[in-house]
Image (cartoon, rainbow, N blue to C red; front, side, top):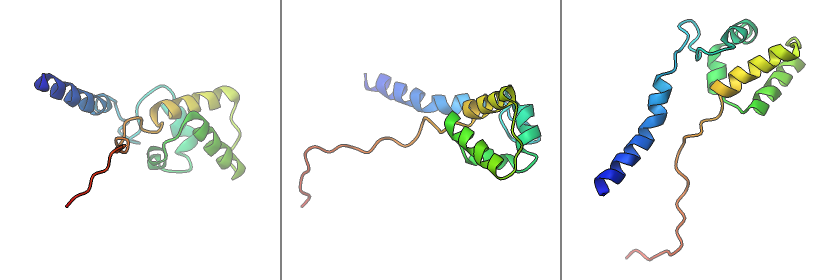
Length: 114
């Protein structure tokens, strides 16, 4: 039973890396190839590096706020359908990591070390 439990834990930990490895990256930008990447190349990479996208993961609302801030700085306003496609690409491919460090341990009964 311990072997089975260990195997299940290993598979659970391995899955995010296996899924990530299956994503195709654009050779030119390093961004994930998916529907909408051409819009990202056209509108986002005209001003900054793709690394900025990869480093600043956000939710759909977070990406919307980032776009609004950039528009306040001079970025053009997008047609609603263009913005929706950009937000879809960013939020689906560059959202905050769901897999991360484990939650802190909850210790109900402390004991004294001697």
